[in-house]
Length: 173
Image (cartoon, helix red, strand yellow):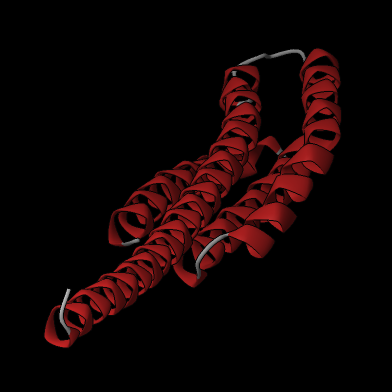
């Protein structure tokens, strides 16, 4: 074998080694980028699922309170003042008991969600406080029943608004 053939063989071997090294390095970098993208996508999916679960829990708590609030107006028609007062007091106590999980879910919404759903959840909280305050007034004076009905409608509307705001926020992310 002459010198030129030896040089060609050495150059070819060196080129193959360098090409292999460059290819491996490129493959490793591509794999690293792909792994980072997959991890980021998984993180985003976990965050979205956490927000969704948080919002669903808040909706559940708000609906449970709404069910209790919706039971109240039928007692406005009870003629016996003592029976009406006892029924309203019982429902008010049930509302108070459901308030702790409602507040917990509101706190989690405040930690996990975007600003728009947080503001909508705070509006549900405010509307709930207004309805509860009206209930206390109605227990003393049944003539205030219409104010409670308006407060109840505002509460139910605020829950619907929260649902819509949460839906929009999830579509945008």
